Image (cartoon, rainbow, N blue to C red; front, side, top):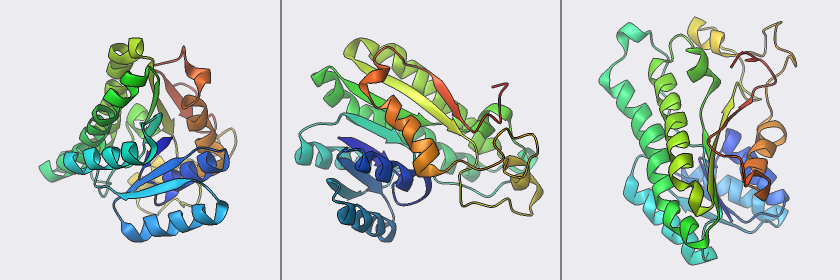
Length: 246
């Protein structure tokens, strides 16, 4: 049974589709009801055992309640993918505001930490668990205009390593995925955002974005499986080979 936060669109939607088609029971933790209802309808049509739960990742109580509903429905938690994070417009570092920092850290860093804490006792009690967090290629490369976002994603990678070290003897592995741009998004005209997209870069080995369901979700599936029983604290670059130096 796998929880996916931010399951209402993009990578989160691709994750629940892939995991559901592969036989997993999935919980969609999503704060926008219209998005959640759309994806739950898709999963119903596919015959996937699922539960949609309204969840605000900026609210610890909301996260705790979502995990409690999951345990009540399924009896435990096998894995969680911390994908959700609120975004802010790109801005030069010299112009970053306190609100820019707070939004990215409350939704990304704190939201990921609260979710990990919420599932930890259930995973520890059963002696098995898989946690997959989402960093970003931008955080590693320091993409211009993305200062708060980059810092939050690197903080998530730090939490990943610490949790891996502290929880490994409880049978819990904690790993991180760093994707680059995902399919169906086009490089905008604004300079900072254009620099962060790789699809038009002639140096990209594959020359295309990653598809949420077919390219990124299978790697998460691997990290959620028993194949990673001796792999923890790692960051996997799921970017088509663009950032080969990372």
